[in-house]
Image (cartoon, rainbow, N blue to C red):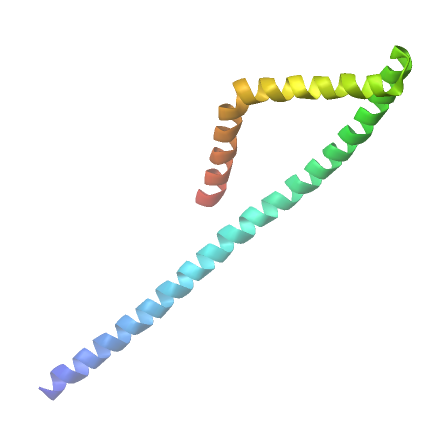
Length: 113
């Protein structure tokens, strides 16, 4: 009977160690995925910031240039704003689902990598 008790204790200790090791593996895998996603988002964020800065200054220059051509500065800003309103409507009506699917697939690909 005592031998069965020792085997049970040994089995219980092995199961406990297995559980702890499995938990550590899950934590390390989660850390790996998180670091992989963050490390891939940082360069994308920097590129986005640089492109957004370029677009900001380009749009100001374009608005001032169009305003000079049209006779009043604010006309240029209205034309640029109308262009972005039109582009936003086109994007929302026709490209919204495609872009959402693209982003979702990108995130899933990073998670399963």
